[in-house]
Length: 143
Length: 157
Image 1 (cartoon, each protein chain N blue to C red):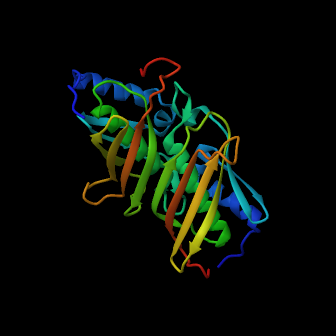
Image 2: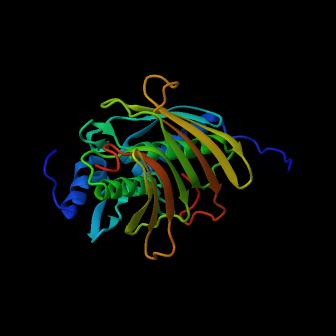
């Protein structure tokens, strides 16, 4: 197994390694063990021009990406976890501003991780969407 | 709760509306989502393989997030194809089960079905697949809300 970069570099690496994360424009802000993903607004993320609102798929993808990034960082994984299932609740329309998301790892078993994620914009207390899902861990929890 | 159905929109008009919806939705256009065929309440389509949509560079497999956007978008399109007249909608929830990774470098197809429309909610399911619809990449179930607020920018194109 190759030497690992420090945790801060690792999360940036995880996002850089994912072409779709770069396409969305998502970046990571890590303070200690607290990871926040940041999604700056861009025209191409729009799903409804009239409102305007972020595409539901963008919001869902951003939540899933946050779960994967958090699992990769917390588990110091060499390979990305794979999504088994996700359930997304859309709570408010995503306005054309910067969005943030944080994941909470509810449980990591030997093979499966259970994760909850919330995304918000201007106000942390008014989330725009929430996700809970199960992910398959590539090297197990003890990796 | 019975009511006389209003005259339904001709299929050609629904088709045009969905294609316009793809073209004028920046994210759908950016991903390259494409409508292949339409029936009442059912839409078939695809997302073409592109390098920027890869989720795992080691395998070259398309990102799970693209599958989310594809399923969300076509579930919404299926609602449009089930409505008798254009109406703004918003995703309420979306559940996705991933069966297997997509084969790298290949388009991902989607089949979406809106199987029930009530006054305020529409229920959909969809499947993402490649060669065989019976060997799915992912299954989705989504509920959509009929938004009552009129669009500030005018009616749907």
